Length: 95
Image (cartoon, rainbow, N blue to C red; front, top):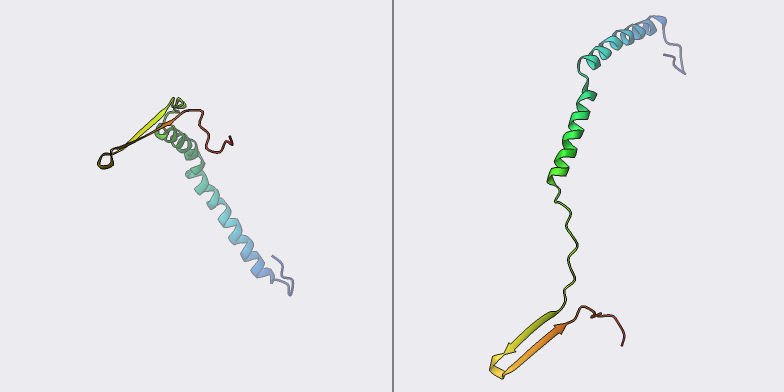
């Protein structure tokens, strides 16, 4: 390592290089003993299977309603109201 302001003493630089060299093999040993990346493939497969199992099956589109008939009766006034809505009814269509 070099400093912009001043030179690093050779003893300190040697200690730093020795410490860095001592850490490298240990890091490789830990990675080789515990290959976490091997667990990614089965866990990804489990997530995909869970998603497929939990999603509902696709539904067929609903058939259009032929006619809607609604009746209201006001018994005390002897009035009966009947609404019939046809499938070609369009609320925003101009006549």
